[in-house]
Image (cartoon, rainbow, N blue to C red):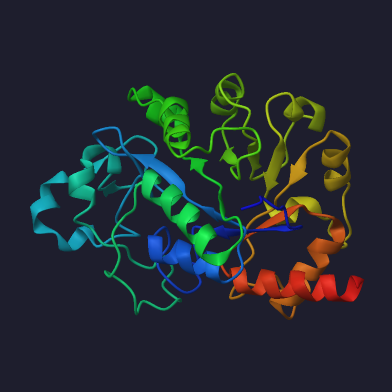
Length: 301
């Protein structure tokens, strides 16, 4: 199957959490079915060094762990986290597999809470590959290394484990449908010496680095979407500067149920950012992005 590159890319942010609990195989499958080109697993380590898909290493907000009396005494406090919780690095993969995922946002449907288990990174890769074959188009993966400095302090090595999983799956070449992302520069610099896969530097606020600085260790930026526009709603030049440095621009997060005041519909928001020139979008509702991209393509024809 040929690996084509639609534009802008639609990245299923944590799967399809607008509809189902985040980071589950069923959620990723739905994201692909709804039109996503890539599915995005956030990765954290278990006690026995396995990578599982969770947005955070604490488990209370996205799983049913509080309903497991056998784990009651495992609740603890960790530096950098507010209050006590349960943390992935204190549980083996076998223990994690006894948990079930829950919708993280209170205002969204909880009908599918406690139905789906927590997937490993290997399972997510296998799902992307099998769904691609089923749908007849490439479904890539866009993993994020969560808190790499913290996990490194505990002796866990993201680069080795992530790249090892991709190599086993045959997705370790430069043209594989993979982006690896992080908010932390050291892991990106480490990965840059070990892989030709494209790397994305995530930005939550304005960076002191220039785009050429970032281009030395990454192939693109993943900025918070508001970083791309001035207060008057016009491009502030960040997209243009990034493109001039050879960087892709994949902003986050587009949510049809949390629209900025400036937009009446999800379609209008996507249309605005597509016209700005972004190369991809992270969205909780891949179907809305797909419809907007399809409409834009029809207009161009």
